[in-house]
Image (cartoon, rainbow, N blue to C red; front, top):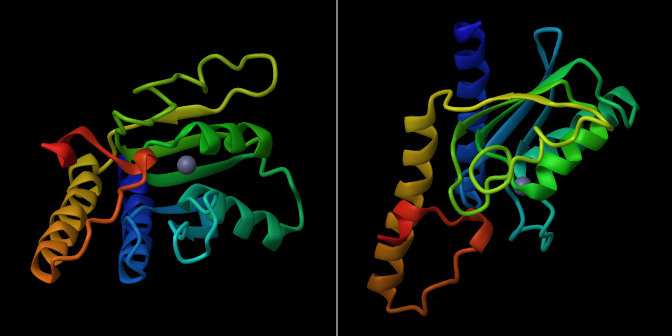
Length: 174
Ligand SMILES: [Zn+2]
């Protein structure tokens, strides 16, 4: 199981790189059904002018489109950062079976850090979850992104772009 989790989290990390190439906070996600990836997503909120374009949402949309079903029963979502409240809610609506995430998000995480949405929704559908898979790699990718960004901004003396609060992490603020 651990090996499987690592394999798919590695794939999510590769998609996070794609976000970074688009100058987006590097977060990636894959949706897996019976050992196959049926949906891919990476954070694209800025490039798409879409505050809902988080990696998880993009992966869910991709998969639902592919299988022509708004329910994603018996699937597992792998994402490099703990889902926010919007994404946790979407996992419930989509009937995703479980979510596996990498780094925790102390500012906006809605699975264990700030809210525990998946544990408090017995009536509708319970999404199982596990965090901490390749957490170090997942979080250092985000940290490095902001460090590089700050250095670039300093170099060009540009006004520092506001980090979206949902993607802020304690350690980035230090
Ligand atoms: Zn989200």
